[in-house]
Length: 561
Image (cartoon, rainbow, N blue to C red):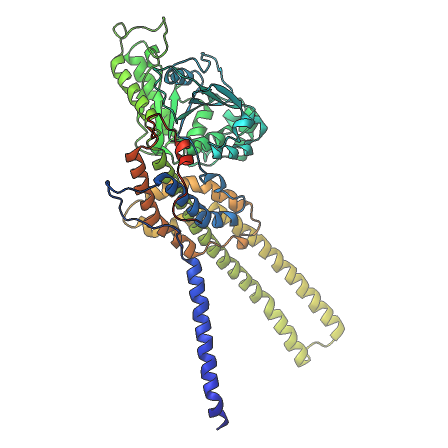
């Protein structure tokens, strides 16, 4: 009867425990859900009006970065994705890189309609110069430009030190009426890439084509210019809307610095890269052109591990800036008319950079999300494999150490030890020696596990993404892996014990997949709407409006974070 009297209380306690467990699980599940402060649209009609589309796009990207990317990035040593995040506003940008004397400054001067940059056969510019159209002329030095409000990401360049900021400036020019350089677009002129005496023999390491770089190569790059030129170019290339890579027919891709920029700075940015073989009018005949074109194609094939290399635009600068020594089209043996058409295509892409600005921002955000998901997936796989091997090693050690203890206890219980003191002392010393031997072997084995895990990252990747390679070769994942692998390798080398790897939970990866499926599609629709409306072309007064002014003119969207 006593038990029956307490039975209802037991049932109530059980129900209370179940309800508390369900409440905790529900709260944890709600914490894992992405609670969006905006409404997703499956499709935006052409006649639909979306107020402040640019501001909404920027707010959504900022929200996704802070809620989805940053929590994972903060748990990783060194924060490998810290400088891959977007901050607004940022003016549409065209990055012009290439060997020295490849015609970069001449091409930029023609776009501006005036002599803004020095030109010459020898290297004439040793820094990065941002040029843009303005009603008021001004020249700003590096430290001043790093704090400009209309380009907030510039402040990230402070991490490259004073050596870089001392070789960084911005020129705002009042251009002639006939200049084709539009407002709201900035062009970045860069120093010509050359062969550094120290880096040329070291930077081309065996893993060079796989996106890896030796520590000595990075150190040589810093000693050569005072800052890491390859990383600076990478920073600009990720944020640029178009990257022009110019080559001189006399030096078609033969410098080690150019090859390093191709493999490290421009990895994964094929969608906005244009390779240009410039100054083809300086070639005497078609044989020289075929030799220069073929040499450039051969050089690109050595660093771009694909069957199809990027399309090479052959053009020339003669006619852009007057040169009395340049032959006319009629006197030249090469079809300069065809090369002039290729030049018009390059110019058209430059002018289209503003139009594709927000599309590139969405593409960059999508790629960052995919890279974070890949890092989280591989880290989880490495962590599981490491813990499994460590557990097996400790199990073996315990199996080796326990039997002697059991045998010693049995012998003491049975009185098998005749001389107790001597026998006990000998048994204890023997067990200590055995323990030290096992401990040393386990420590060496754990170090070998760490080395093997670092050496078998490719195998870990193949195992983690085996399901994606069943019905196709997974070229997209393999190409992304070449970009992610150096970041992951640096993360793992900074951790002494792989069992202390940061935990990236499966629901975080699932949430990234959900964002890629839903939110990125919504952002694509907004970018398409902005491109269709082109609000930076004219404002209400009919005068040109820059994207920076567009950011400032748009009030915050209807949601708040």
